[in-house]
Image (cartoon, rainbow, N blue to C red):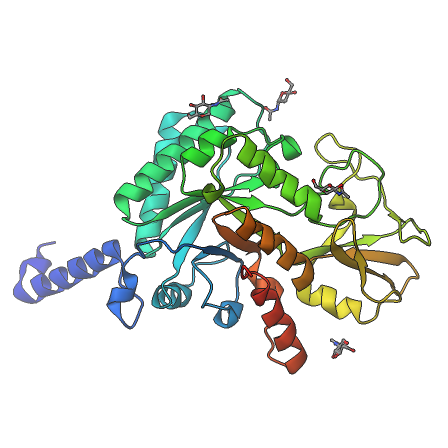
Length: 368
Ligand SMILES: *[C@@H]1O[C@H](CO)[C@@H](O)[C@H](O)[C@H]1NC(C)=O
Ligand SMILES: *[C@@H]1O[C@H](CO)[C@@H](O)[C@H](O)[C@H]1NC(C)=O
Ligand SMILES: *[C@@H]1O[C@H](CO)[C@@H](O)[C@H](O)[C@H]1NC(C)=O
Ligand SMILES: *[C@@H]1O[C@H](CO)[C@@H](O)[C@H](O)[C@H]1NC(C)=O
């Protein structure tokens, strides 16, 4: 300590202090420091993209994107680029519903998220809690309080920031998630409706079905709106992935019966299949024995193929045709916008076939 009091030591101490101060406030990683300012203002139509990692974001259609929710590792280059294009970048928020029952725990969690967002020059948070909650339980009330308090803290601490919450395709206690949907919608900027995994709980025949059938998807929105939620508080989430089901048997009418795998009380579930990103689906479609088929009832494409062990699989997914139909509803019903899980499912390799395929998926989001 004494040695530092001489003049050289004093200068060094000052340097160390300054470095610490810079660290505390963060150093803007962008070439243009103004890109570290949060995005303010809203655009009429929201295009909400989940990013899960890697550098594929460089090939996203940024002319459409309003928000990127980064669920992978923080990437300062992505933050700078998003801000350059006027798009928000938001954190992922997930926390145990058992823990948030304690108001002090909630406050500490929110504080930590706000600080993290500030340090990384981000524009809000997407709360993705897909845990089971019983109606009118302590967790039920705590969850609504969490969303309300998070929104208040972010709006106050980061002007123009956005707080959103992910909900299932329908408000009817899907996957035993009985939340106060109207309360949560009123307490945040908007809900991202995950209109996919719609076969997570199947109570009827145990057969392969579309990930996001047209009618079932629209019924979910009608139910949210019927509860009193403003359509402008709803962003439609579409899947950029599909399900590959091994068939126990396949009928001539393309009915693929699947293994009974129960999920949250339902005897049968899409858990019998495996999720495939669109680029892999398209690859597999090429070696299908059925060719690409279209189900008029569910308004979704599917195909069948045989694996190297001789097992027949049926693959259900969404393509530009099925997504366009849903995007038309977004416009017609006046929803806030559209988005997808997730932006990294496409083939961004830039070959002519891949490029056409990928462009068509982005294009399908646009309200016609
Ligand atoms: C919900 O309630 C049921 C029946 O009372 C109970 O068995 C279950 O543990 C509860 N679930 C949660 C997540 O609290
Ligand atoms: C939902 O939350 C809102 C806001 O906290 C509250 O006013 C309302 O009573 C709650 N509704 C139900 C059904 O619990
Ligand atoms: C889909 O919904 C429309 C309108 O609600 C209804 O008329 C039609 O029968 C439904 N189709 C199926 C296959 O459920
Ligand atoms: C799939 O088939 C299409 C049409 O025949 C062809 O253009 C494309 O190159 C094929 N893709 C792959 C990955 O084999």
